[in-house]
Amino acid sequence: MRFAIFFFFSIVYLLYLYFRLDTPYKFVLFWPMTNITLLFFAYTHNIPNLILGKKKNGDINIFLLLINFPWLLTNWTVFYLQNIVSKENVVDHISGTPIWIARRPCKTMDLAKFDTVVDLTAEFCKGRVASDTYICLPNVDGIPLTNYHIDFNFLQAKSILVHCANGHGRSALFTAMLLKNLKITNTYQDGLSLIQKSRPCAIPSRLQIKSLLQR
Image 1: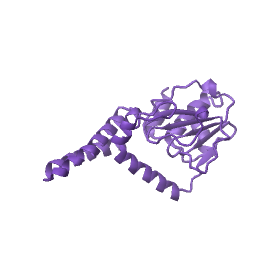
Image 2: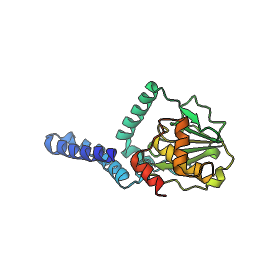
Image 3: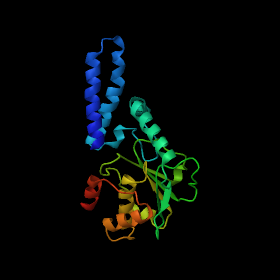
Image 4: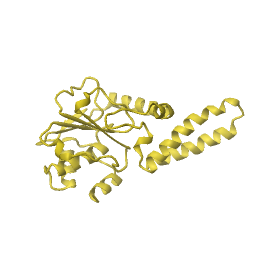
């Protein structure tokens, strides 16, 4: 919701600038306005494919990449700066399970030990991971999962890495569902509690938790 509010006021501000500026170059504002309008609809209607159009194999829509590039570049820059100063582990193992939860893997992270990598980001391109171990389920940050449909039995007895951007909201929601479907925990709430023992900052938003507990 906070992103939707930010995008709405950004659109209003850009429209204000467009009508206030007395220069032919003001048409350049159409690019960020189109970008932010798409993002506004992506977040208010929970449509992750409006961001990069990511498919299950991680392929993206180049047209959407170009349209949304102003925000994507800003988002990626903030993400990498945040990782530089963060003291949180990149990845944490959920104790007693074959599941690891992580922020978006960095270049130095060894992904070879994982049978399956589940990517929940809608705003990042596919990282350096082998295609036969990679499943992309793009979701929008901070709101309930809309793309999570998968054969959970397929993941039985496998070493699984689940990641979003920071390994907090989306990753925690999906991992809680995974733990319950694999019968490692009895409830989603038990799953969230188990996750937070290993990764304390993996705390979804209230809206995300509400959607999970209503399943």
